[in-house]
Each structure stands twice: as C-alpha cells, then as structure tokens.
Length: 623
Ligand SMILES: Nc1ncnc2c1ncn2[C@@H]1O[C@H](COP(=O)(O)OP(=O)(O)OP(=O)(O)O)[C@@H](O)[C@H]1O
Ligand SMILES: [Mg+2]
Image (cartoon, rainbow, N blue to C red):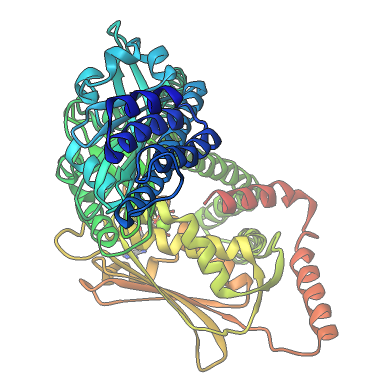
C-alpha cells in the first residue's frame, strides 16, 4: 500500500486515479479471502487519500466538499467489491464441494442443458460409460450414449417439462460399445424466473438385475409352458372391448394354429364344432356385455376331423382402471371325456349283460319251480286222454284228472304269483323322502343321456310337497326308466324339439304324483294294453322289463301307475304315491320304523325261493 501511495504521489496522480489503484488492490485482497484485511485496507486507503491526494495535502482535513463525496464513494465501493468478491468465492467453493460430493456417489450423475449438451459429468459417469469428464463435457448426451428410450424423446421431455421429473429405464451404449440398462431419474432445474435451464440425470446401472430377472422370467415361462403342455391346459387373455387376445403356446397347440398367427374370436370360432357354435357365441356375448366370469364346455372340430372337448374357465381382471380383461384357462378334456364315455358304455353294457344273465338265472329258477306242477298237469292230461280213449270212457276218472290238472295249474300260478310278490316287496328300504329331491337326484344321474340325445329337459315341480315314505333308490329307478323311455321314444324326432317335461304335484286325492311327458310319437293304441306286461317291447334291443318293474315298485309303495298318449303328440307316464300325513314326531318315528319293518317282512319267504328272491333283487337293480 505504501508503494502504491508513493508511486501515485510522485507521479502526481489525482484523487480519482489513486482511489482506482486502491480499489484494484482491495479487490485482489478480497480474492485472497481476507475480509478483515480488505476492510482495514479500505479505511487506511481513505486516510491516505485524505492525507496525500486532497487539499490541503499532508493533513487529514478535506477542504472541498467534492473530495469528501469522492472519499465516501470510494469507501462504499470498496466495501461492495469486498462483499461481492467474497460471495462469488463462497458460491464457487460451495459448487466445488457439491461436485466433490457428487463424485463420491456410485451412481452416474450428469447435468445437461436444454439442448442436451453435457455441462457436468461425475466420477460415477466416467466409471460406467468410460469417457473422462473432459471428453464428455460439451457433448450431446443422447448422441454420446446412443440413448434408447422406452417412449419417444419428445414424450419424455414433455413429462419432464410439465412435472419437473421423469423416471424410467434407458439403454445406453458405453465407450467400449457394450450396452447397459439404467434406471434413470431426471430432475429439471429452472432459473430464478422459472425458465428451464438444465436437467440433472442420475442413472443407476441395473443391467445385472435385468439379466437375472430375464433369466428368471425365461425359466418361469419355460416351466409354465412345460406344465401347460403336460396338463394340456393353455391360458389366454382377452380384452372384449378391443378384441385383443393373448394365447399361451399350449393354447395355440390346442386350437391347432401356428404360433405366428394372431388369435381372434373369429379364428377360434372357425374351430368350434357346428353344434356348439350357438353356445360359444352366447358365452362371448354375455362376457362382452358385462358378465364377470364364465365356465363352459364346448367341442372343436380339428382339420383332421377329430373332435376335441374343451373346458374353459375365465374371470375378469381389472389391473388397469376402466379396463375389463378376461384371464382364463383352456383345458383339453378330450381324454377324460372319452374315458367317461367309455366307462358309461361299459356300465351300460354291464347292466345289459347283468340283466340278461339274471334273466337267465331267473328263468331257470322259475322253470325249476314251475316244472313240477307242469309235469303233473302233463301226466294228468295223458291219463285223462287214456280214460277218454277207453271204449266206455271213465268220466269219473276224467273228472278227477281234470280236477288235479286245475289244482296243479293253480299251484303253478301261485308260485308265479309268489315270485311277483317277492319282486314287489323285497328289500325295500323305506325312509322319509322329499319327492322333488328324488327327481333332482335323477336329473343329475341322467344328464349325460339328456345331452347326448339332444333333449331339452324341463322341470315343473310343485313347491312345499309333503314328504312320502319310500325307497329312494327304487323310486329313482322308476323315474329313470320313465325318462329313458321318453328319451328313447324321441330318438326318431328331427326338425322339431325333443322336449321332456317332469312334473310333480299333489292330486285331489292327496297323492303325490310324478308325470314324465315326452314329445315323441306317442303310444301305438294297439300296444296300449300290453305296456306294463313283462317282456313286452317294441325296441330291437329292449327287454320289455322297464315298465313292468316300475309298476311293481310303485305298487310296492302303495301307488299306481298309468300311461296316457295322443299318438303323434307324445306320451305321459305317471305314478301317484301316498303322502305321509303329518303327526307328532314320536308317531312319525314309529311309523317310519314300521315302514322299514314292513318292507323287510317279505324276507321271511319260503326257503326254496331264496335264490329266486336274490336273482330278482339283482335284476331290479340292474334294470
Ligand atoms: N314314452 C314312450 N313312448 C312311446 N312308447 C313307449 C314309451 N315308453 C314305453 N313305451 C313302449 O312300451 C314298451 C315297453 O317299455 P319298457 O320300458 O317296459 O321296455 P323297453 O323300454 O322296450 O325295454 P327295457 O326293458 O330295456 O326298458 C316299449 O318297448 C315301447 O314300445
Ligand atoms: Mg324301457
């Protein structure tokens, strides 16, 4: 300062020049971060200026007002310069500190201006991408890193400008040409007046995690595909609004389409078996118009003319607001269906064989029991002829023979009657039953027949019917026989509906009635009287025992069977059974006990007819 003062004084510098020199020195001192020094220097400088450069010189007195104003201006300016320089230095230091901290981060951090030119590049960025700070600064970030965006750059920038942030996965190419997947977070920086000036981009390398996830997904997908292949179950997604469909590999396999085909409802429809198209459309329509789930079975006709049976279940998922999407499974149940069909056929065949065998046994037993009276009738008949062949016929002997023949005939008839009695009553297990429950049981059991014969079944069941006392299985047998007859009678019907109606009601006499009505050809008036006869049949494979057994069972329950028909308009077979008249609980229990006791009492039949009874019971249950 002394040097500056000396030089200025000897050169005869004026107040302004000397003040300017002092200001430069003050600025330099401030840059050296010495506020106290600058302040002391400023005050000393004011003293020097007053002493050496204002009139009168060599005194601290300031003669002129103008000089005093200049000195005050000098002091103010020097203080402002000192403060400003300090502030700038402090800001610079803070920025350096921030940059140092960012360099410590493991994430890559860089800043780019609104033209994507890189203005900051941290150590993490150098490590990940391979370019040094000096190389990266000034370059356009998206070009340098060959950024691949999940959506367009314009959309990404729009989000950044409107929300101030953006986050997503990017693919960058590093200096050595390898690709890295980064989880990128952008933050917009604005100037004091709100103008966007730069974006801070923080990137986290997730390449390894992505690879592991992809590998896991691939594994899971492979396991899933294998499991779907093994279980013959495909999966699908369907958006009813857009018609967009996703099929798993197994679904493509089930429908028999190549994997590069785009699945559509129409494409599926092309495979649906003609008889099931209406059902399929109905399911699609319901699902489109708001149904939340569906569960249906339909068949496919494959190009090689084979039939596939599918069971499809799906429900709505709403993972995106306002969007309805079905997710479901397509199960190829052909093998199970064929197995069930085979089992059913085998059971039917077994039942037939059992009936025929049992019938054989029954015939043999009946023959055995009836052969004795028949032999006696023949013997007496022959004797009768001999007596009549005498020149003078012995009429008294003839009368004896004929009387014995009648007796033996009656005995045979009694045996037959006894067999019928056994057939009617034996082994009835009577319990308290709800008639409608029995009908529902049967509907479940005959579902397959109803479907396979394309019959539309209708139930019209009276509610709150009183209970009855009966053998559930035997009554089921009766209704099954009637339904089967009705279904079989409609086999020849084409071009008009095959309707089967089952009604239950209470008639005026207080009997519970079940009526089975079909829309078949009706009963031929010629056969009307023989319908309930054993062995009467008009069917090539029929035994003619169904109605006869039904009648026996109904009569054993104290009921009655009847048939009505208008030829050409179907037949109605019905039976009525007495209802239980409600009494107190104790009385009811006793009555049920008696019912069972009574039903079992017929077991006390003659010993020699035991095997017939066994054959009959087997025959009934096989019928
Ligand atoms: N719903 C019906 N419509 C027209 N005819 C019928 C009907 N039900 C029975 N019939 C006639 O009565 C006959 C006797 O029936 P039934 O059930 O006793 O024996 P089936 O059906 O011929 O043989 P199966 O012993 O195998 O039942 C039948 O062959 C048929 O001619
Ligand atoms: Mg029958």
